[in-house]
Length: 266
Length: 255
Ligand SMILES: Nc1ncnc2c1ncn2[C@@H]1O[C@H](COP(=O)(O)OP(=O)(O)OP(=O)(O)O)[C@@H](O)[C@H]1O
Ligand SMILES: [Mg+2]
Image 1 (tube, rainbow over the protein chains, first blue to last red):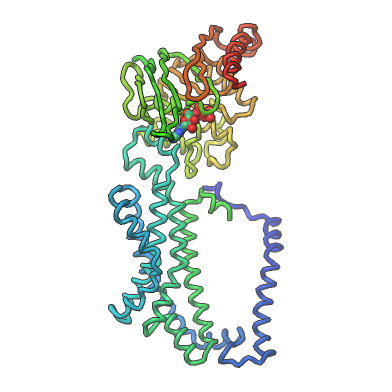
Image 2 (cartoon, rainbow over the protein chains, first blue to last red; image 1 turned 120 degrees about the vertical axis):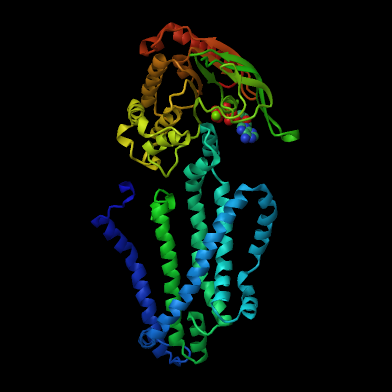
């Protein structure tokens, strides 16, 4: 699909650099300010540490950080994939079934109002400190935005395309695979991306509440030990994890719907 | 097989109760096999509504439509319909969109390669076959939509403002291409337009529709020789038809 390729030009690159240099400067300035204000204002190291120390001490504790990234990453990936695998078919079923739309749909909308994170203590008291309760929390956090966006996606085929499909006499399956599904993908991805952003939040909070490993556990423990430097290192890896998941979803979006305006714009 | 389209007491009311909109009819009309009939009327008079009812995509409130003697109940799959809003899907190229019509009908795409190339060439889009709709201008999209709507070579064509988004020059050219196509293959055509000149140039009959609720005020037989080129359009007979039609709309305060 050559027509989707953006040809990078020298002028374009120059323009992008010009546009981003202010951001880069601000970014660097921010960290310099942080670094030196800790010294200038004589902030005790157990309150706030300069970035250089975060990097240094974080690097020293790298094995543990990587181990815990793997733990939290596993929770996030399993929960997220489960949510996608279950929410998409359910959204589809609700979109096409009047009965489900009158029963399960209002129920889901109600549950959506409840902050899922609030269930975390309950799940941990029921299921213990292990992987399962975290996976369930991540799953809950991701499930609802995906279902709701999928329902919206499969219900909003344009009037013209609905009429067009009917005018060809195609059956429901053919219409589904050739028209409805591709037309619904962009809205589905809105849900996938929203869920991806929230997945790490769910995992971290679940770990705060009760766990003996993972980045959330790590951040809590080192904070208790008056080690903000290590807490920031943990936060950094948690952010990295979230970015990786979001990046994967965005990559999938680019591969699956390169024609869509949201992909073409950037 | 005959492709005569017959409207008997066709009426459409949208909604019910105090919010009901009487959109169209009642209307009686016969479009004979191989005729080119224009539906000419102001915006909102129910032209698209009539198209959809003819195609079996919209229920009638009263009356009946039949094509070739068979009453229309449900979508008519052996006609070609070009909707007012284009039905190109953004995830396929122009060629892919034309193929979509075939695939949806279970017609083998491989067996129609030559036809696809030919119809693209007929609307001068051969160089854009592998582009996506968003890479095309509005008028080019409309021409692509025409190809999509007609690739299965229907004997009955419903065209809802197919030339609406074209510039005056292209419009002139596609009009004459459409006319050649009709003269060659003699499909039955129902053609929606706002343009008085366009209706008179192309049609064997012009159905003049009143403002909403649309009724057929008059069906004018256009007795001019085909092909109708510039010569014909400059003739006094042509002007007389234009005048006759304008007078009707003036009577309704539309112009
Ligand atoms: N789905 C609908 N629900 C309610 N009213 C409708 C619907 N579709 C059309 N109408 C009404 O029916 C009338 C005729 O609409 P229609 O689209 O057939 O007009 P038209 O002659 O094709 O106009 P235009 O030239 O602007 O396309 C309009 O007044 C419109 O408000
Ligand atoms: Mg219309």
